[in-house]
Amino acid sequence: MSSKKDIRSFNEDQLKEILISNSFKPFRAKQILHWIWSKSAHRFDEMSNIPVNLIKFLKENFVINFIKVHRMQKSSDGTIKNAIELYDGYIVECVLIPTKDRITACVSSQVGCSLNCKFCATAKLKRMRNLNPDEIYDQVVLIRKQSEDYFKRPLTNIVFMGMGEPLMNYNNVLKSIEKISSKSGLGMSQKRIVVSTSGVPKMIKKIADEGVKFKLAVSLHSAINEKRTSIMPFNDKMNLKELEESLSYWYKKTKKIITYEYVVWKGINDTDADISALVEFCKKTPSKVNLIQYNNIDDPDFVQAPVHILNKYIKTLESYKIKATIRKSRGQDIDAACGQLANKS
Image 1 (spheres, rainbow, N blue to C red):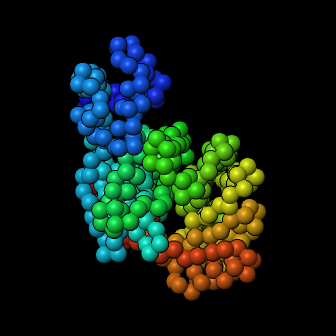
Image 2: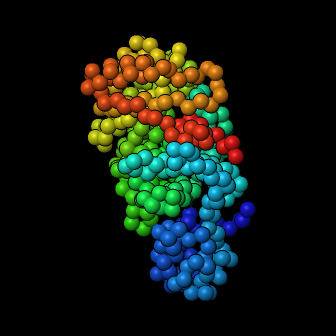
Image 3: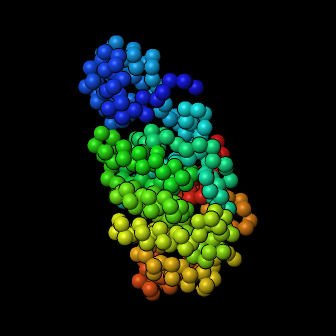
């Protein structure tokens, strides 16, 4: 592993200072950044409009730590899962999810995860480190290319629902979104980006204050505090009352409705009391509910509830004018579905 600093960690002003102090023209900074961000150059030699002496300087002093595909798997439903190797040898996973009207990139934000949800395979891995902004950006670049190569269609959406808790890597996630959506990056609209969190109240309020344009999804899974703690132990320290307050703050600041991601398990959250609690929680802040098909991670404590229970959830929510849908999982046969990303590579 090189001790040289990744050139993508510098902004234009910082790079200008470096170039000027080494007798190079400052306008070259913009050209270099265009190559590494807009054109996703992996090597300095690719920069055809940069003079040879500057290329030599860049090689001697910097690196471009671009991600590498360690293993790619294709599902029978078209989903593509990528195990990607980072510069230090760690591996994370990102997924291309194709549907009739969109192609979505599901990206990771941490190596492992900071939280301890019992039903999630990623949570069984300890958090080893946060991903850098460029490592998140590179996942989108990779999936965008796969979308064009395999489906002849552009990438349309991005979800931060891969490995890790995005709001526990707050600064780097926001920097990556800024670059993904900027004209000097990929130019994708933030309205097509969803950041999914298990619920970190302090950080939800912080992103609301940032005036962001992306959407927020919350992995809820129970609106009964004690029950949520039993399946998501971190809830003991960041409970539903705090979460409710932060989401109310989010809506007040952004006017964007919240999506609740909700898996229904047999014998865990499949009662009338669970449904009633979810309805009451949804009433407090404008929201919609995605009921998600559970994806097996070989844990006998968690079993998908039968279809009639899901339909009962839907019927009850809709009777209170709360929009609700059942989201079918994709990529199950390659362990690429929600909750299954576990670095088996």
